[in-house]
Length: 386
Image (cartoon, rainbow, N blue to C red; front, top):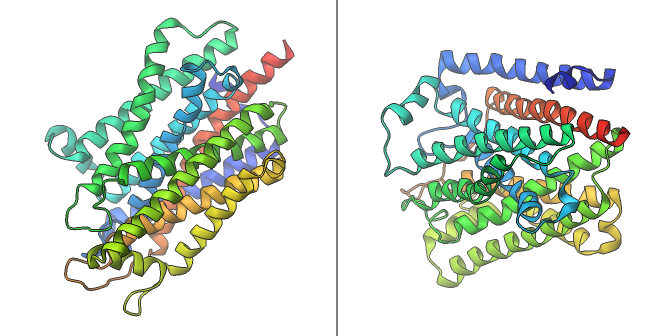
């Protein structure tokens, strides 16, 4: 079926070329990083995780968010998701590949990846993160490919695939839970040392992943003949709304715990992120904007008349996606290192090579989504003509 991705309009090929140029620029920057070392990034002794791990953390959530389409379809037999469930699985494939690439560029020398396999450490959460991410990637490849192949042939999905689909549901939850435990298991970082880190991660994942899926499907409906269905999109939008409300509630719980208890270690990072601390506050505008944009997105989704309008729905989902990206893809990781255990502040400033490499990995994800969605849409259009 992959041959269907080789046919397209000039706009389609222009987009492909743009992504390849973006990837090429990032590859050049990565070769420079391999030669010189991670010193070309904005990371330091005090802030050892930067753009790479922040984006890894966020896109694990995007990948896990795909399960919000799989659960209603296969556990509750919600047939309206029948045409779009494969798109959720393909989005998860792209997101997991991006996560793995962000880890590769963050560890410096790529050969170090073999240490996880050659010298396994079962007491380390990184060991389990490797297992769940690669396992989830394999599950989505198996489920997505065979589901689409069955649709192409006009036959039910093979029975042997169903167990993999059911396994992928708790597995999707596990990938973001394990990622959350990477942070919550570090006692020296008060901002991450919270029992609701995993629920926060899952709430933001179930908002961001489906929100991105809706935006892509709205674009697909506009530029192709494939229609995912208004009812399906509206149902996903309600999921996004409820998940985002839960995410904002959990964030509020963090504020209450920190400031009502008046524990300095828990207060300082929140002060730095939202008000500034000791004259430092580079992230304050972004974090405040994230709250406003997130509330705005929830408001748009709560109003039925706005939510049912394609433009209003797209704006709402874009707001949710941007707000969660700022919160988790910027503030959560960077903020956790400020202040350091010696109560001093070192701010993080990503460098141009670092941003170029990160943008290239976004380009890889965009390329994978473009190719897989082109194949899926072609199959759907063929079905519509039959």
